[in-house]
Length: 103
Image (tube, rainbow, N blue to C red; front, top):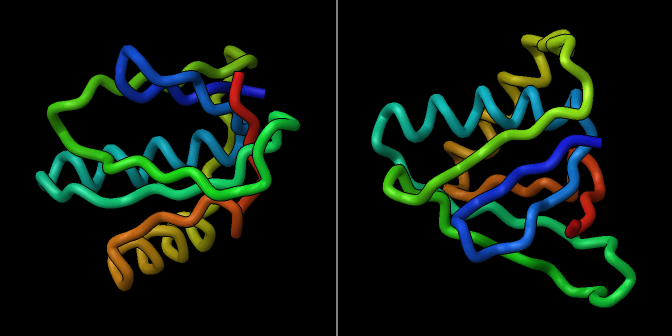
């Protein structure tokens, strides 16, 4: 399981490598266009049943850490669905893709 580290003060978010690879493309595309957006996920760290959200902005440091050195395959249909959902609502809902954990 890889990790997404957003901002230097926040805990890393655990996300399986294949989903993290798709997320990396979506986030990079949005930020390259200078488009900020909300990202929401359901933590599975055992402590909270609620949702967590972060405002993703080009000025905030972001690190994608993969467990495997090999690049996971990118599914064009999945990527298109993620981009469409994010563009339609202004929010990327990770719980519809996978449950993630705080590390």
